[in-house]
Image (cartoon, helix red, strand yellow):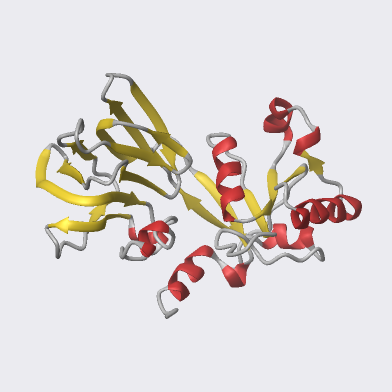
Length: 269
């Protein structure tokens, strides 16, 4: 049974600052009745726009998703960057028809709660991953607890990360972690340059578990926590779990869905 066509009354568009993205914005606005979000009151846009066409690369798509997270507005990316894993191929023709036939991909972010050495607490959301990274030449020493049960007393490493399926092909994969299908309902826990235990490759976790990272000897081995673009320095503990109350919708051309891209990525050498 074919998917129902989508009907969007108000189509928003937002572009990165690169020359390619700005030129694409100009061309698309000449051809279609689009709401340029850069020229619109953002509060009004949130109320009236049904979909956002994003012009840029993966990094700009992530920033845009963070900007509108929780608003329920789907995103259709057109690649004006380099890799474009979260984007569709750029083509000015047939935009409205592509939007009508686009396939939904639901992404759920992670919620990070971090406590720093001075006692301040911070929260941030991550669409790709939450990572803990050493701040100095000293390796980090991190204890890993899952659902209140200690699973690793001390991981000596450059860092460790917890990745969503959507982010598993990025930093997680570059660090030796597995690529996760979107339908797996799993998270990837991946060490970054582990020193002890040297052979530990990480773990696959059910998506609804809480993971706690405690930084050992933080005064000697300082660690920062990063949730996508948000970095908290000198953390002593970080808890991460899936944020069930928020979800984001990415739209893809039917012949190039994110699920299909993640599958193909596993066969690229």
